[in-house]
Amino acid sequence: MPAFPPSLQSRLLTHLAPWRNAPAWYIALSGGLDSTVLLHLIAQLTHSEKLPPLRALHVHHGLQAAASGWPARCKSLCDSLNVPLQVIHVQVEAGASLEQQARDARYAAFAQVLGQDEVLLLAQHRDDQAETLLFRLLRGSGLRGLAAMPRQRRLAAGHLLRPLLDVPRGELLGYAQAHGLSWIDDPSNTDSRFSRNFLRNEVMPVLARRWPQAGASMARAAEHLAEAQGLLDELAEQDLSVAATPSGFEWLGLSSLALAPLLALSSKRQRNALQCWLAPRTRLPDSRHWASWESLRDAGASATALWQLTDGQLHRAGGRLWWLSGDWLLVPEGTIGWQATAQPLSLPGNGKVWLSGDLPQGRLRVGYRQGGEVLALSGRGHRDLKRLLNEWGLPAFARARLPLLYLDEQLVAVANRPGAGAGNLQLHWLPPTNAQGLR
Image 1: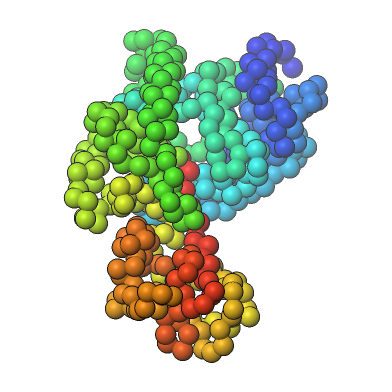
Image 2: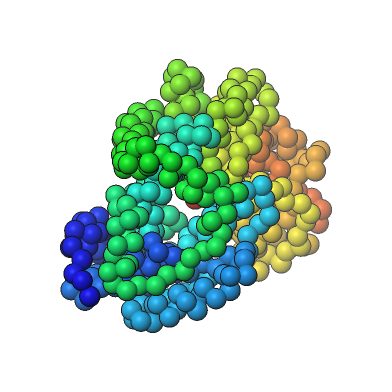
């Protein structure tokens, strides 16, 4: 077998050096050329280097008949390299972009597997980076999009790394041929109806004939753009630090920003700060949809204003911006009977509640606002709940899901309001987790 120059292995080790104490490394193994080479490279390095435990992940989308045999092909490869393989079956939701839906399903599967500080290694290379830049340029992406694929980022509790981003596909092909590797050729890769395939099969070869270094130049441009984006992110972090003041409702468990410091910025800096803040939470809107931010920003103080984004909603309430996603996008309904001795009580889609103080005797239930509720307050008599909520300043979006405790059909306690109940009785509420989008 011809010796392969050590430069590829050396570069790989350099990029992976900061992660050598991670609890585990996972390789996203499609079975194609790129991931096969990455798996083989690292499996060989384990013979001479002390590396974290190595495992492979194969996500089976089931989108084409040819894919049915790929898990077995991946298992054969992993067995030959003594690397454990986990096959994950996912269902791709129907949507406008099959490519995007498959990608979302794949990354969601990866996120579920990764443990705390574990590392997922992806085999995307320099040619992929150039295609990504061109693809996003044609879509009119902003600077954040044109920075293309980052070499590393957080993914759920772990980290996602792309250690081959400076390696051209030709070098990976040479490695595979020199080591007698075999790999899966996905027949869908030749279907130029898919945008990525069209760029790869039709556009990039034409560019390379005129400019042989086109791929390398575009990948380098993406690095420059990423550096510029990094500077904008530093500015955004400074602006956000001023707006990240306590809300007074930290028990809601929601991310929020004070609006006034953002309003003091220019429109461009507002947008830059919000892009940085929203990026880990949702897919960012394109330039055509940022008018919705201006509508939210300029809404009257008494207006119920929100901005619907791909993975959640941005609300304006109480002089703040609030991010809502997951269960927070659904309004709980109905009532739940409760034996006070059975604590805590789980509320469908709305966290859980429990009681403290003198437990009442009688028929208990937990419900939500219907309108016209009245609460007896010590020393203040009976007060309209709507007015009390206004006094407390609870954000409007939280009021419909605030648990209320009834004793024999009389309202006796409001969640998380000490003193707003009979005697020393308190109703405690742990709201649902505001699940974040992983981008």
